[in-house]
Image (cartoon, rainbow over all chains, first blue to last red; front, side, top):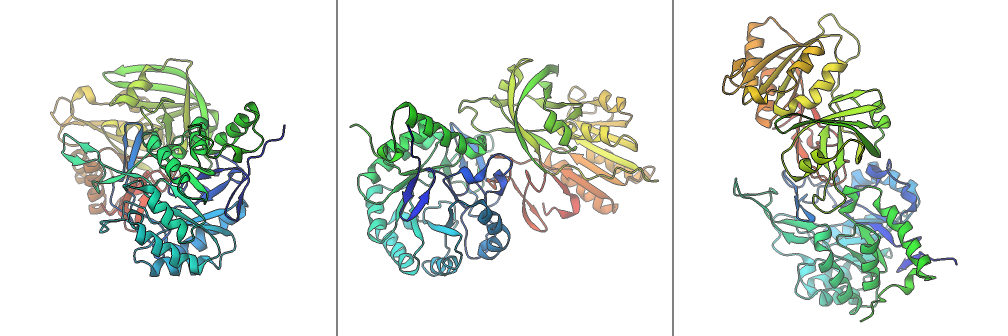
Length: 305
Length: 259
C-alpha cells in the first residue's frame, strides 16, 4: 500500500512533515556529516536579525531533568553575512528553507527583514520569532499579547507573499487566544512551542547555572505542555499547526500529529542524536504502513476524545 | 574535517586510581582522523538522564583504537565507568580543531606542555605525536595522589616536573608558578607552550607567554550541549568576537583570547 507523508503548510509543500526547530540546527551545514539533508521536510534557520548580534555571556546552557536551559540571546551573524556565507549552502540542499527572524525594534526591523527576504527566491517561508525569551531588556514578548501579535503579523503580512509562520510562546495564560490573533492577522501557520521560561541554580555558589539567570527550557521535560498547547491551538484555528517541544523519537512526533500538528519540528534532540530527524521520517512511514493509514494527514488531529 | 557518529565497542575499561579511569574504544574512522586536542562527544545512556552527550578529550590513538581518560565526577561519568568491555558506546568525533604543531623537527624543537588536573588528558596524545622534539611536561595537581600520567609522559620520552598545591610532591605551588620559574631560569626556551587545565591556570600561562613573547596554545573547557557547533552554548570571548569552544576551539592561541 502506498503511503503519503507529504504535507502542506499554506502553499508550502513538504515531502514529509519533519522539520528542524530554529536554533537547534544552526544553518544546516553543522549537520551535513550526519545525514542527507535533502530528506528533511524543511529546514528552519537559527533566528536572524537585521544586524549581527553577539548574544549573551557564557555559560549559556545547562542540563536539567530531561531537558536543558539555554540563553543564547539570539546570537547570529545578521542578514548580510547570512546571505553571503550561509544561504549558498542552504540553497543547494533543494528543500524548503524557512528563515526564522526576530527584531529588536518593532515593527520596523521585521518589515525591513521581510522586504529583503522577499528578494531571495530560495527562502520559502518566514517564521516570525516573537517568542524568544532570551533578549535582555525585554520584559515581555510580543507573543504574550494577543493585540501586539495581531499588529505585527498584520504588518508583516501586508509586505510579503511568502508563507508566514508565527512562532508562539508557551509562557502565556491562553495560547488559543494568541493563536487566533495570528490567524486573523493573516499568518499561514502557527508554530509552537518556543521554550518555557526556566531557571536552575548552583546551590554551592548560589548562582544561576546560566549567566542570564532566567533561560528557556527545552527537551522532553516540556513535551506534555507542548502537546497540550498544540491540541488547544488545533481546536481554535483553521490554519496548520507546526508542533514542537521535546520530540525525541517517533512516538513523540506522533503525539504532536495526533494532537493536531500538520508538521513537527525536532529541536533539542538534534544535539543528542544529529541523525534523529531522518530516523523519525522513516519511523513515521513505518507507523503509517503498520496501521494501514494511506496519508499522514488522516492522522492530524485524530485524537479520540 | 569530517565528523563521524558511530557505535564504538569498549575494548578495555580500567580504573587507574581513585576516580580516574582509562577506556579504550574501537573507532577506526575516528582513530585515523584524530589530532591531539580534539575530543569525542559521548552518549552514555539512551534514557533522558543524563540527556545530553558528554565531551571527553582523546587521550591517545593506537591503530584503530582511541583512548579516553576520565574522572568520575557526576552521573554521566558514573554510568560510563560502569560500562564493561564489549559494550557499545554512541560517540561522535573527532570534534574540535586540535593543537596546531609542525611535523618537521626544527633546530629549536623544544616544547613545554603544562597540565593542570585532568588537563593531562589531551596533552598525553600531543606528547606522543610530538615525540621527536624535546618535550618538557609540567604536571600540576592539588596533592601527590592527584598527579596524573607522570609515568606515561616519562615513557613517551618527556622530561617531567611536577607541582602540588600542598607540596606533597615536587614544586610547592601552582604549576603556572613552576612554569614561571623555568622560564626565569632561561635554560629552556620553548617554541610553543601547550596547556590544558583550569581557567585560572590557563590565564596565568597566557600572561607568562605574553611576558616572554612565546606562542601558547590553550585548550579550553566550556559547558557544551551539542559539541558540533549548532547550539552556540559554549562560546568564549576572543579578540575576534565570541567563538565556539567546540568548533573554533577547544584550542585557542593565547594571544587570541580576550578572557
